[in-house]
Length: 330
Figure 1 (cartoon, rainbow, N blue to C red):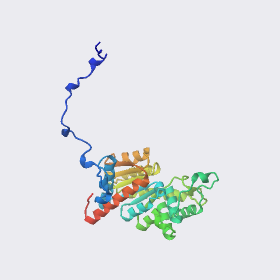
Figure 2: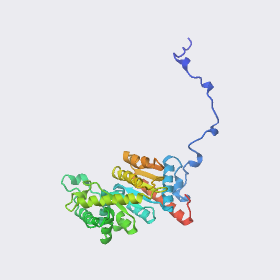
Figure 3: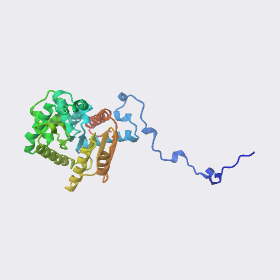
Figure 4: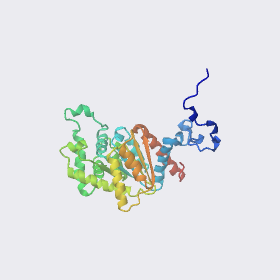
């Protein structure tokens, strides 16, 4: 008994009529020269050569090139840091990037100031919130609240922001582990630090010395300062948002709008979001919207304690190569 034809086989397309062409004529997105080489990093001139010129490997190399080119061209490189960057042990790398001229402004939230002070004061930070919350001890470390609140009350009235006020206080009272302070080292190097604070979000706001008027005025001054530095980003500047999911992406977007409203040509720059997971605001307010009129945005997802050391090494070796050769060799 013969096989019965399928009920719908008469509707099959005829593959014998398909038109093909030689593979060599096709444009391919992955090429031999883009592959990652199987070599030891000491055997290559740059750590960048270990990354494939494909997807995020290509993006990481382009981010490095954007930062190095900005520094070489005298354009600002702004870093927005969430507090977890400090808690992941990365402050020494950011400080060294300051020393290399790869940080034009450092923007942080209030928690960043807390952890930065505690590292400088005691060489340790990050309390066990769950263990302290039940007793009401969470956030009540005396020195943290006293130092930051006193610094802000003392200096903000002189027309400075929270970041500069903290930097001044650190310069006047050297702390046992001051070499670990982002704010202290930035102040020493003449790099502006801006602290963008939402009242009620930081442990120091619970302390009796907290002055809402001083904190509010200081963070407003810092917003104006941040916008002022950002106004020079056009045609080659870079902004990196590292680990801030809400506050700093919102601050950055408003600063871009304000700078453009005031007539500054803030276009054709590079933005980068680095975080452990993808969030809506960084992707929208940092990577996409600000670069829609010119420039390019990148999103690099990975743990800070892995991604930042990689980027640090790439940037430092790129800057050393440029300065050693007298020109870019990326």
